[in-house]
Amino acid sequence: MLKSSTRTLLKKCPCGGAFAKNFPATTGFTSGKRHLSIQEYRSAELLRKYDVGTPNGGVAKTPEEAFQVANDLKTSDLVIKAQALTGGRGKGHFDTGFKSGVHMISTPEEAKSIATEMLNHKLITKQSGEKGKLVTAVYIVERKNATKETYLSILMDRVKQMPLIISSSQGGMNIEEVAKTQPDAIKKVYIKPSVGITQEQSLEIAESLGFSSAEATEEAAGEIAKLYKIFSETDATQIEINPLSEVSNDPNRKVMCMDAKFGFDDNAAFRQKTIYSWNDIEHDENKATTLAKQKYDLNFVKLNGNVGTLVNGAGLAMATMDVLQTYGGSPANFLDCGGGATPETIEKGLELITNTGNNVKAIFVNIFGGIVRCDYVASGLVNACKNLNLDIPIVVRLQGTNVETGIETLKNSGLTNLYPFSELDPAAEKAVSFTK
Image 1: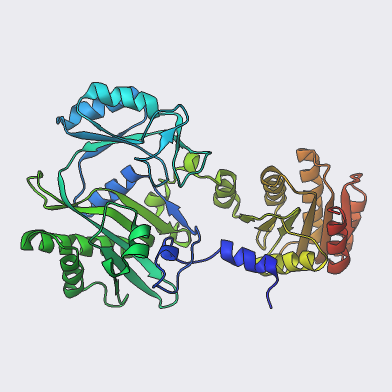
Image 2 (image 1 turned 90 degrees about the vertical axis):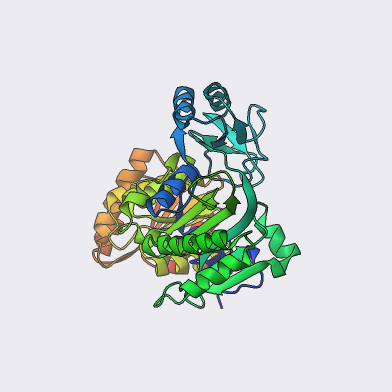
């Protein structure tokens, strides 16, 4: 039976779709964040690449740029949107008291004025919490007259191992509420990966959305097929279009994606280099963790306990957490520094633990020296403690290649906060003792 620490970690490190918890009739989903999210203007850029209809627009990072973008669009029907990775922007407010992250505007002067209110301020929404999200860009687009708003998303069902398209004729609103109050308004269609979406499936979904004409329905079916192509070719974990709208004032399109949210599988970053170059690290609520993963290949998850852990190997890390729990401790994090732990990764791992764990009273380092030598790890630990000026108790259990030399290095370091062990249980018990 899994210890509670392992169950907690598995809940925090799942491999499923992002919005499944909102669709109770669908099985096989989890609510983890094993994906990159991109800003709305980047999503629009990707849609245009695949010739999916979306309003013309441009991004601005200064009020002066906002003026120029609005001027270049050559229309008085415009919308300016704060770029922040959070939902509910229109109903949000800024830390200055300025209301809403979405405004209708008609002149370049308005674009400049509202951009001044938004840029470099935090947008607070129901999803962001009171901390809010820093806005460093605004997106200015043509305003389209939507006569019908619908919802469409593509997710991966991990249990059935098939993509799933979720759609509803009730778009432009909180889709979670629609799922709760009008479950019959939610349509789900599974796609066989070996076949891809068929013309019949895309037309079936489009017809269920209730557009006003056969032309709009046929165009929507084509857009759905293109969206599935994006999903499969970019290793996406999520595509959410809300709303997918029928419009009356565009000479070339009857159906357009008015807003889009994308998520991409981190394991495919090496294949999707352009998309991953769009990672807006300044908006990542786990910025330090993300940087560590990108640069040092550290797998880090913050938990709620008081014993920091640094281990080489995911299985050993989970076992370490359970041993701490056995002795009455509570892990403050999951941190796997990989099989080839280096002095640099060890120092960065200790820095992560101490910077993100305000309640950490001790650190438990558990290293098995197979690929890496214990004496090499010990030297790295000593240098890291000195470089970071750490005085928190650090219990170090070493086992494997050159373990005797490694333990001697720790004992002779002159650091009184290092406690070397070669056996797991007494080391875990010692680490927990500092939390009592």
